[in-house]
Length: 99
Figure (tube, rainbow, N blue to C red):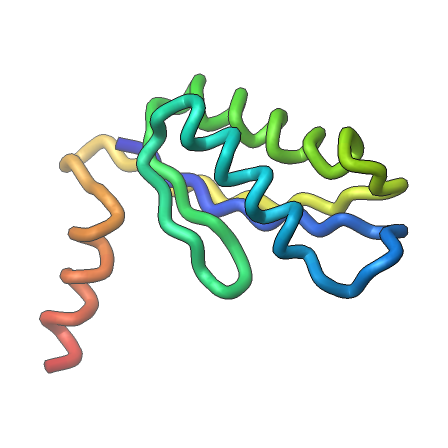
């Protein structure tokens, strides 16, 4: 299953905090019932390619709807055909090699 990492940065807001924007992004993900994980600098989401691209667009648009004047969005898409993958297995795979 493809995994998308997304970081949406609102610019031109009155506060340095972005937690309200992250919370709004999570609400969008909850509505779509997509599996996700918040990290300190991005959000990682599992889903099929079409829904991931659609959700990335909605997440990019959300800060504009909240009053931001500029939004910078970075996405990384990890997809493979040789075997199934998910967020947990990706992390566990590295952990097994560390310990």
